[in-house]
Length: 268
Length: 260
Image 1 (cartoon, chains in turn green, yellow):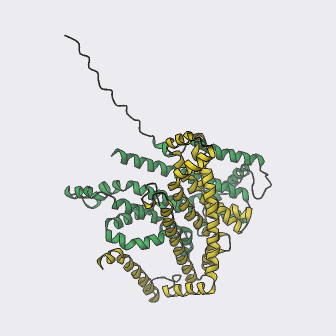
Image 2 (cartoon, one colour):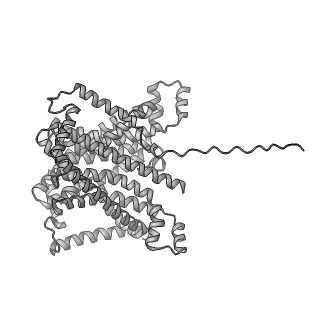
C-alpha cells in the first residue's frame, strides 16, 4: 500500500495584533525636546530675567515645594480637574445618550448645542465666574459647564449610530432599563465616549488653569500668575515644564485608553 | 409647505424662543439669585450701544486681524514642520513625541512667560496664538504624509522630478484633504488663543472688552460681548466648513474630509 502523504494545508500566518502602545509615538522622540533643553542650558545666562537656564527651573521648583506652595497648588488643581472630569463623563454620557435616543430632541437641541460649542471656553469662564463666584466648587462647576459639550456631542452621535437591530434584540430578550444601558448602549458608544473624553480632557485642563489664573482658587494657574508678578521667571518656566509633563502623561493615558477601546471594538 | 416645514428646524426654533422667554421671565420676575444675569432686552440694548459707538467694530477688527495673521503664520509653519516630520521615518521617530509634549502644554501656562519676555503687547498675542495654532496643521500634515501611497513616489521617480518638485507637485496635493482640515482647526485654535491672550494680557480686541466688562461688574456688557463672540465664532466655523468643502478635491464627497 502506497503511503499517502497528505500535505497539510499551511496554517495561515497569525497576524500579530498591533500593540496598544503603537497608539503613541516612540519615546525616543522626546530627544528633540531634551536636546533643546540642553542647548538652552549651555547657552542660557543664570542672570537672565526672560530665559534662565533649565537647571535654575529645577532649583526654583524645589524651593516652591519646600515652601509648601507647590504641593498645595497641585492638590487644588488635581481636585478641580479630576472631579470636574468625572462629572463631565457622568453627565455628558447620560445627556448625550438621552439626546441621541430621540430624533426630535436632537433636532430641537442641536442649534443651541452648536452655538454653545462655538463659544470658546475661555469666553465662558468670566461669564460663569461672575455668577458662581470664587471657590473650588465654582471652579468645578465651570470645568463641567465648559468641557461637557464634546462629551454630549460625541455620545449622542455614537448613540444615534447604534444599529437598531441591536436595540431590537435587547427588547426581544427582555433586557431594558439599567441593564440595557450598561450591557448594550454603553459598550456600543464606548468609542464615541473616548473621543469625547479626549477632547474634554484638553478643554478641562485649559479651563482649570485659566480659572486659577483669574484668581478663583489657588492652584497651579494662580501660582504661575503669582510668580510672574514677582518676576520669578525660573519658577514660571519650571511650572510650565511641570504642567507640560502632566499634560503629556495625561494625553498618553487617554490615547492608550482610546487604543484599548478601539481594539476591543475591532475584536467583537 | 410640508418640505419647507421639514427643512426648517422648528423644534430648534421653539427651544431657542422658550429659552429666551424663560430667561426674560426669570430675571424680570426676580425668581432665583440673578444678580449678575441681565435680562435679554438689556443685553440687546447694550449690544446695540456697543455697535453704534463703534467700540464693537474696533475690537472686532483687531481680533479678526490678529486671527488672520496668526492663522497664516501657523498654517505655513505647521506645513513646514509637519512635512519635515512626516516625510522621513527617522525624523518622525526622533521628534514626534517632542511635538506631542509641546502640544500638551496648555497655552494659558505660557501666558506668564510671554508677559515676562514680551510684555502686555500685540507681539505676545501673535507669538502665542501662532505657536498654539500651528500644532493642528503640523499633526495633520505629518500623519497624512506618513500614510502616503508609495506608488506616488514611483511616479515622481519615473518623471525624474527633483525633491522640491516631488514635494510641491506630488506630496502636497496628495495630503490636501488633511491639510484643509488642519488649516480649519488651526484657524479655530488661533481664534481661541487670541481671545485668551486678549482676556489675560493684551488690552485690545473682543477678549479685552469681555474681561473689562466683568471687572467693571457690567453684566449687560459682559453678556453682550459673550454672545457676540459666540456669533463671531459660529460664523467663522460655518465659513471655514464651507471653504474647506469648496476647496477640497472632490468637494464635500471627499472621504478624506474627516473632521470637516
